[in-house]
Image (cartoon, rainbow, N blue to C red; front, side, top):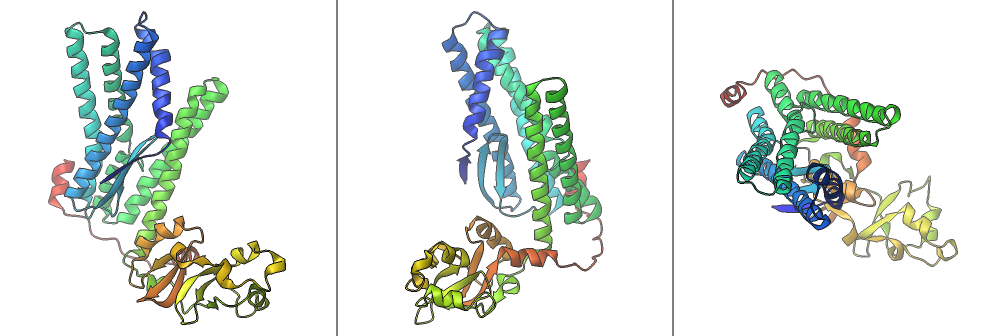
Length: 379
């Protein structure tokens, strides 16, 4: 399993180190050298990151035990995230995966509190005891904050598991947890900016930043749930535009432009075919616009097209949901659909958006879950 570090991790390490070395430690235990303050502060910041990693690893381990594939873990400025390839199959599995994170942080905080008490009893350096006590407190705070019933926090996952269990509707449960996440996010944004504007306390920017993150993440989670509900199990062949208009790689840009925008080439992107009929690239109107106007008579499509190696390629039977992240990351936001090397279609983000916007038939609410494991764990 891959563990990644976002560049913003450096920001949190610097902020924690400076806050401890310049504020917390000298205020609580004056008289030590600057080297001691800074060394211990940096060590505490690193251990804090390790505790965040332990929190996410706990999610990943339990997720795998419950049949959910884990793509990796990424640590960043506001914490970490275990990237799950799929969702839990039952509310009980969702509950187990969500609950283990805060529980891990709470156990870490308790263990560190015991270590701090033991060091104090042994008359260890007060500065060291202070550092361990701070790590204990921050882990307990992390556990409490993550247990708040608002997506995308772990408490939001617990709320979703409960709503899913009660209603039998995963999408409805996700909407409820996401709404709670946006509500908490706006509360933090408003109170944070109020502290800055009325109390002139710049530390209010922190809750405002966290609140904005919660709003964005909760909105994205609700959107992904809608996508999974509509497109779950749907292959690319059902959403793509079949038999797309193509352009030969030997055509000049002048010839190409002469056919648009109301003629044959009325779209904005076209698969490019070689003389033998094989796909060799993708031509976009943007690439044509970037070509010098005076050279378009002699410049061919093959010279300005995006090579096939730089284009997202999909198979007709590939699930749309698996393809979507690659489409969003692609500069052209399009995929060429090939069936054993033969061009059969083209898929754009707009095609997926159009499918999501189609009015859905009303569905009946599923019966309430009777999973005995969830009943046992929730009691």
